Image (tube, rainbow, N blue to C red; front, side):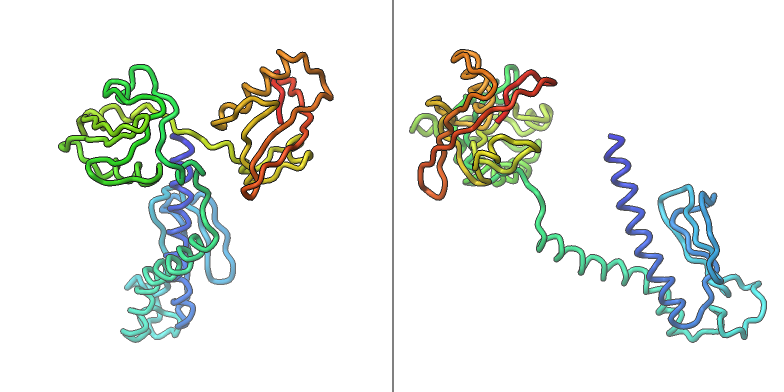
Length: 295
């Protein structure tokens, strides 16, 4: 909650700064003296005067302002060329419009940049919506959804991966019924529920299969040193079948314990790489903090 609030205030502060910067730059462009540039409303938390302008960070972070010389009708010397009141109607409108236009320009630059760079998303969202586990007492369990069920459609909307499933369920209102088309062992079954109960529960209480595909490495990773690469799909470790990412650690612990392996022992990791089967010998590392063997 606190992290979310801090993130919100940071983003809001950036948007306020961009908006007020538009007013500031436009005013300077037409020769108006800027007396103060503040992110936030008074009282002032920090301020520093540079030239004619005092730059401020203020306590109330829900807005900001640019104080222009001449905005106050009592300001002296209305004929001063740096006075806001001395400017033409077009110039004053230019200053007023520059804030929103700066926000628009920022959005036009920032959003394509986000799409170009990309954003991290969980890899499982591209996988078919097959359920690995169902929590006891969850709404999924109440409906009769089981482990290994694969969801084909929700309320008639076909879904081919977890992202499409999340999107389809997000469009269901509390007033609607809930109908899942499920593939269970090659048989198609229908399970009906209630939109309002789904919203009340807050979570369906299921977990997805996570394909055992390497997405990255931690520091000092034995697997990386042994030659395993990002994108490799682990299929077996010392002959034990790996179907899900969560199978890897228990399998390693089981092998090291039951086969009496000692530090320096190697494990044979079978994997798929570019549609070919590869075998890699990996020497696990024992982490004392967690008391676990790590690949």
